[in-house]
Length: 401
Image 1 (cartoon, rainbow, N blue to C red):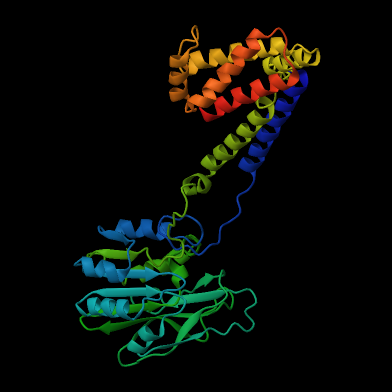
Image 2 (image 1 turned 180 degrees about the vertical axis):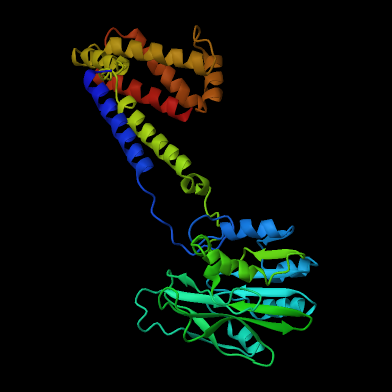
């Protein structure tokens, strides 16, 4: 390899190492995607909540299938927990869930807002919290269960819209929590807006919560917010199985390409990119020609026909018609021996009949041709007309064959 090529490779390797070093040391941007999935450790994942729930309950089951399908194929009892920014069950699926609740089970749904059929079933209405003057998008929440700390409020500052229940069935609904705009530290909630309710349904109960962020890593890890989430967990019967929905999560897994594992894992992604760069370098430096171009040598052309034609022209132009006729006759007799498989040592009537039969020529034409050949052989010289007639009869004989 030339000195110039080595310099190019060295510079390329150093550039790749510099890019990798910058990528490895660059601060990773915070991912604020509202995932809510159990395995995500990003701010709006729920890894911490899942870990804490596993500690207080022996049976925590993650459900990756639609509730309609899961309830149809499994006989379960306990608590079914849903939380996400938005959840829409659909008519038939909601009816199946309500039937399941009426058999003595608990349904907890935490979402920013709820579908109309669910609200109508429980005689509820929702309305967005007034954000006038709340330029920092800061809110505070609290629980009202007398068995819990009802004086403390908990701050949340990563949302733009919240809803509250502006109409409830007071005879059948228990208020669990309130929400309001943040009004400063140690300031109680002034305009109490209901955001969590509990309502019996058949033999079970339903809990609705408009603050799904309570289950996220970001909220729980901001002390003392973990006390608020713990208060919500107190409404879950940990002695029974807890089913956590993972189907309606915004951040559930989607494998749309075989390259997903490579591109979603940082180390594998960089290994893939470096491999592509290495292949490109190999093509650039190893794909080029390593020696001078080999000239294309054309094979010698077969000059036999041209040579024969030249000699024939020389004979013809010099008036050697007799020699041409003899060569023509000899080639013709060779043709008969090779193609008709007949001996030409003796030319007689029997030979002419056999030759005519095998060559698809008439006896008369064959006899005329050989009569001319015999006549020309006996002459010491021939003219141009006789030579042309000999050539014509021979070519016509071959054509009919």
